[in-house]
Image (cartoon, rainbow, N blue to C red; front, side, top):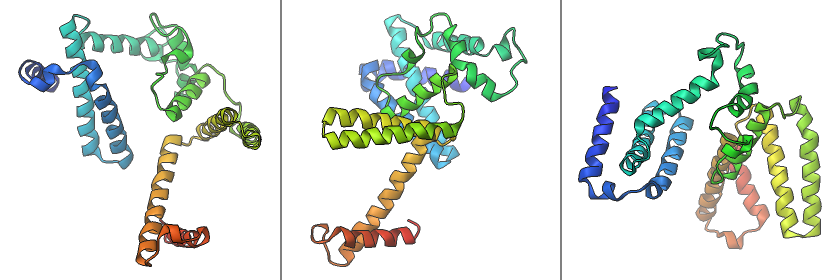
Length: 256
């Protein structure tokens, strides 16, 4: 509590005495907040506790910043924010705080009914999907939608059932490519990606982390290709795809 109070005092001083901080609005720091969220995500993926602590602090600073701006506008303050989230968590966990205390038997049981509990929340979203931000990156948005649908019981009964859908969407994407309609191709590739993400989710694979790992692997191998092409006094423009593939296979063989 003392540490949090110190942060609030620092924010007061910055808003009152620092010209840059005094000029900021919710809109002006929104992009910076998005950057902080990604930096926290990076630190978690890298497994660096000290970096995670630092990034949590940075993100907390932004939350206090927004609350201070709102307080100046007479909208709300940090206490209102904390009270709202406390009330929400108490309502959404009747197995901990309410009349169903001790009734939950597993994390899966809680997850399976999560959206149904949220739907009963006073002042909550009118529809299940309403709470998903439009500005969320498409991959994360797709996963959020799938999780919300699952929370309402709308999901595949068994993971292996999803593969028929993946094959169906793959066929439709290939068909759209044969037709040559740009809008149809975009639609079908979107459906195919959505189905593949569903498959990853059903098998417990973190699609964001999996795609990130594939990007890192591609970067390592392409960097190897680039460096070894230069070492041999060659240029990409002078090489055939077969020659590039040979160097690419060298990178794979070395475990890159």
